[in-house]
Image (cartoon, rainbow, N blue to C red; front, side, top):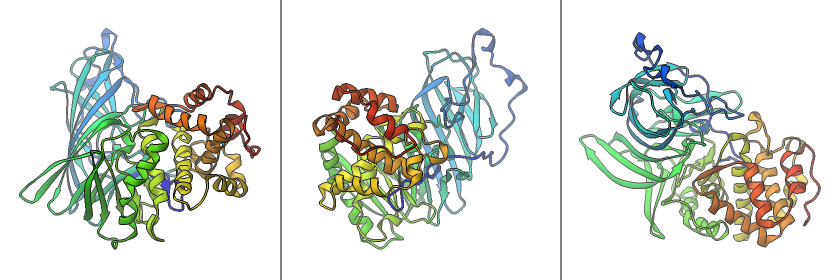
Length: 484
C-alpha cells in the first residue's frame, strides 16, 4: 500500500484495513432452539475458532477450515445503496467441526446451506456462525452457500481509520488493509487463508464494475449488466476489490496476458492515464529483478474520492487515489504497487506484524525504479533517508511495529533502508539472488520475517544477525551499513 506523499495509508476495508463492530443491517432470523449444539458435538466435534490467533488481530479470520475457492455473485444498485449477494465457498475442514465462523460486517444473512443442506446460522458482532446439519470431518471438503443483502458499510478503528465498502456518487469502492472483504461478502478474512476467486458484479447498465484477475465475458439483460472476473492464483482476502462507476477503460494484451486499466471520468485525461499506461513497462523491469511476473493479468484503477488517499496492491490490478497524480505523472507509486504483486500478493504475510516483508521490499522497488529511470540512485536515496529520518523512525522497529505503527514511516522508510543494508552486507550478486529465490520458492504462499532471514542466510551463506537485529528490531539508529 502507498499513501499520498509516498507513504502507505492504512486503509480499512475500503482499501484495506480494519474494523469496528458493525452489526447486521437488521437482525438475522433467530436460529431454532435446537441450534445449541450440532448433532455431531458429542462425537468429538467442536466449533472452529472465531479467529486465527494473529498476534496483532487475534479475531481476524477463523480456525478449523481452509478455503480453496470463492464464487461471489453480487448485485448492487447505487441509487438505493442496496447490495444483494450469494457467496459460495469450497473449503476443507482442518478439524472435526460442529460449527464454523465466517467474517461478515453488517448485511443481513437470509439463508445458509452446507453441502446442499440447510444450516443454522447466528451472528455475534462481525462473526457469522454456521452450524451444519451434520459435523464436518477433518480432511474432508465441503461447500457452503450464503445468501445475504443490505446496505454495506465501511469499518472504522481509531488506530487504522476507515475502509471497506464506500458508496460513491456514481457507484462504490471496496478497498482496504488490513481488513475490507468482510464488508461485502462472508469470508475467512485473514491473509493466511488464501483462495482463488470468481466474481460476478451486476450493476445498472452504463456503469463499469472492475475486480481482480482476468476479465470474462459480460452480459446485459434489460437495465442491468453483469461483469465477470476470475483470479486463478491464490489471493489474500484484503486484496479483493470491487470498483463501480464511470471510467475511461483501456484494454489490451501483453505477453499473452490481458491488460485492463480504468480511470474515473471525474478526472481530466492526463497524468493518471499516462502513469498507469506504463504498468507493463514497469512490470517488465521488475520482472528482470524479481523473476517472472506472478499473475495472469495486468492493470490498474484510478479513483477520485477524497476518502481514498492511498494506493493498494489489489491483486493483478492495483487501485490508486487520484491524489498521486495531482502534480503530474507518477510511476514511482506504480512501481511500489506492482512490486507488491511479488511481495505481498504472491508471497503473502502469515501474520500482520511481518508487514515489513511487504512494505520494505516494495519501497526498495521504488528506489530501484528511480535508478532505472534515471531520476536518482539507490545509494543517494538511502543516504537521504538515513540522514533525515525522524527520531520516531528509529524508535519504531519495522519488524515489530505494533498495531498503531503498522503503516508508519518506519515500516516504509526504515523498511527500505533495511533492504539496502542487506544488499550492502551480502553484495549485489547474492542480494538479487535472494530476492528472486524468495519470490520463486514462496510463490502463492505465506511467510514470516523469520522465513526471509533464514532464506537470506542460506542463499548468501552468511550469518545476518548483525544486519537484521539492529535494522528490524532495534530502537536506535543503526550504524552505517557495510559489507560483511
